[in-house]
Image (cartoon, rainbow, N blue to C red; front, side, top):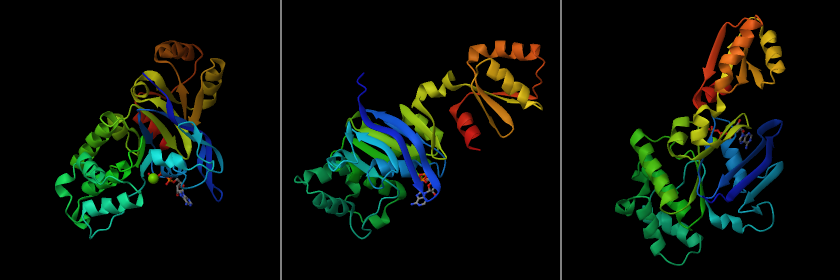
Length: 299
Ligand SMILES: Nc1ncnc2c1ncn2[C@@H]1O[C@H](COP(=O)(O)OP(=O)(O)OP(=O)(O)O)[C@@H](O)[C@H]1O
Ligand SMILES: [Mg+2]
């Protein structure tokens, strides 16, 4: 399978005053991905996506779209991107069609058929003459997506598109995103603070928290044992940490427990050794799912 990078982010940093909102984040999105951007509130998702769109400037780092550095004078990378950041804004007294027509004119497009096409693509053709003021949240989100598709981008960026939608609306949103990706061949970046949402549609993802990258990779692999972590509690954490150091096992200490990266097949052996060395453990927990890992790290 082709895996050409459509977006590369390298060592990206952004501070607001003294506050580091994005801390040295690197990641890449391959052509054809539905790439999940997962992180709790305030993680730095929107800030990172805004930098990718050139809406705000990073303090340092590099952003390449199709290999082109976006900080250069050439802004034509924007013509290959569509984006929905935060809630879409519309003229409430105008119909869906007329809202799109305004965008159509601003984008200096030629063929008005494009308006009908995108309305059909997002399943709003039946509602084209209705005023947007009466639209449900899900319909507004879909109209927002129609806007992102208007100029036929090769990449669209959707910042929490399922926010505020009921389960039916969320499911419609997922089918729409899958259609956009599979039928139209558009690469999609979607952010969310809900793992299950990303897990359902993304093939690759990054998890960020407190402005830092926690992990990036293939979603299925991340959901399997790849990332198995084991947390230990003990009255004597020091004895565990020095043991792990001796075994060259990576670990970190958080909230009074030690979280170690141990291959699943090595766990029995490690435990045997610990017992042999009389290391007392009051609790040992395997953190299997990314959710546990994610929540564990974000508590
Ligand atoms: N313009 C700004 N000025 C000051 N602080 C900001 C600004 N924009 C974002 N921040 C801060 O940066 C951090 C990251 O914000 P960001 O909006 O990127 O998070 P997020 O992951 O998108 O969160 P959410 O899920 O709530 O949308 C937050 O603590 C936020 O308060
Ligand atoms: Mg956000």
